[in-house]
Image (cartoon, rainbow, N blue to C red; front, side):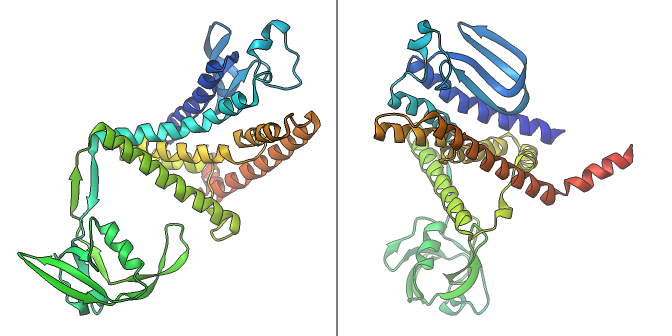
Length: 364
């Protein structure tokens, strides 16, 4: 049950921010909003202010903002034309549609900002922990506790910085300036190429010298400006990794079995909630970036599909015909349905849901 509640919390926050982006942009550009709904299906509770019905609906797997004149072929009362989405300039419609996924990026930035403002940054120090026997570091004279100051006259700011330089060394001899106790010494080490796996699980080769980190970290408190800057950088790094993963998935470099759906999200949300509120918040930020990227994909029925239509309209000077849009929407719905079936199948196989349901039924 904890997994269910965690899933609802995660989904509720993500949907609320996404739809809030559409809603605020619509109101800024003078578009009337008839419904602001968390969830689909029958209305459970709600309140109407002005012309907008703010509601919570029965099926908590999404949400929507219903705008006046949202459908191009809808009949609109002449008095409502000034509030009609369809009758707004194409640039305004682009902004309204793009605001949803952009607000998901904003949510991630705000969460990361909170983390950096409260906890500051923690950077792994370039201090040697364990050394593999007969590895280049061992042969070159490195010892446990050595503090690596520079490599080839490049100052080392962190363990990550050091590992990056070693990885790009192409096996050439590295001149390490090392602090050992009160002494500074120079060591010369030749990296070797070893098989490894990257963050996507792909088999790769990289240059190493055979050491692990000591685990010591720099801790630094940040000003609000620094925290905001770090939150933007962190959001960018995660976004970049997700785009790389998506491209690798399309190319077939990584297996589509890695895709997950609602069951996987519920499982992960529950696990993060058990680890603490901070972990759950970080997970929400991570999934929010996922949702933003997914919605920007140029698939009809998603925000990216609508944006594609509007950009074509801006270039052509007139919208695509209703028939073309209907066919595109139906095709997009079909693709999305296949994707949903596939990720649900992955979830079922990954978590052995069928056996679990069978065990529950046997109990009764």
